[in-house]
Image (cartoon, rainbow, N blue to C red; front, side):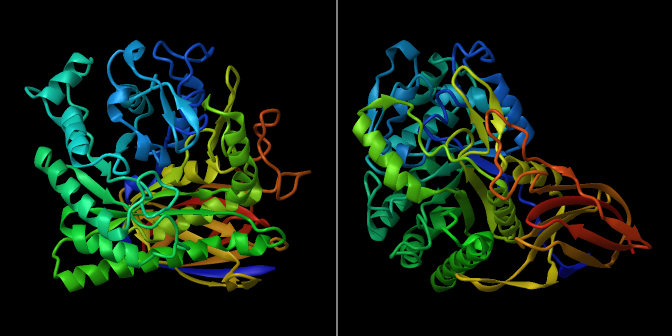
Length: 511
């Protein structure tokens, strides 16, 4: 039996829960847009072509902000192609994903969709093949009330009021040789600095995200962030992080511990930011936008799908990286959300990539149904329940041995306390593949009075750790009642099933 003791003190907190931490990502890649969120002619499509069945699932998932339109796609994208009458929009070749882009869905459509979904827009600009003037013009088009060329063009295109987009990404993964318009850190840092300056001259209220490393394994990781921020620190508000994780064959234990690697990655970027701040004697604080993260079997993509796409020629919205997620993946995604939340003092924005079909929590079929993948559930529960202050936990847990990370806590957890509602939300993962876990809460300054809700995602009866939600069995894996949560005179004990992720909400009072 695995055991853990979690000490929680009311006065030991990290930060308010950043609501933008629960973000998603929509890219013009594969079937994320076309036949994902947008499919005219689908039985569930509204008059604008938005799939209402997908919209319902998006609202249930609960993202607060959505990054758009890329991703690798944006580094070759002309934003002007996606405005004006659809019949007049050009059809383009998208070199990033070797596809045909019809531009039937563009900025205005996305703004309308985002209002329906109830999400904030995070707009990415092209700093691969384009630059300062195109970025400045886009801010004017989107945010200026009127009386200028670009703002009046927006009004003629049907949007009288400004879009008022506050969050902007200054390009995407430009440290990567695969990226259209790949740059050195010095080249990008200067471009980001000047682009940011021009954009804020149009609208001083916007917030800007500089491109960070595409992953921690990049040979330029660390030096890239340092160089870029040395140039652009005073012009930007955030620097980005991207990370994807996969299970290596025969090493499920290390995969379940990948949250440890995410913690290390975040801590490294924080250190670099603060080093530049100190050296430059800056007075403002740059924080982190972790605007791409997920589980992704990218070896399969590189070995199979990428070759198939190239061999098939240029097509509209082919199937790309439509990974099927299982119970193990969902538990790992839960621990990634834990990592992001416990760094909420510095990670202020995060976007799971991507929203529909493409390594996504939601799947859909053209002309057919939409359903929740296993990874839908941890995101949905945390987006809904994590409120108030993030609590700083002290966890003493039985250790599990991993090949990549050594000895790692079998139980991983994070918690929030909403004083206004008197609720403590606790999110827990049992990483053990062969043992239940008992967890004792040691509360200081708070006294538990009742269990408001207790749910768990784990291996379903008759299934195994690879059980997934498929079109034919969309509800095979989900949240169910977590039994064995006991509150006795303020003390709390929980029993977590083997390989599980749980969400528990307690009624608490000040002690």
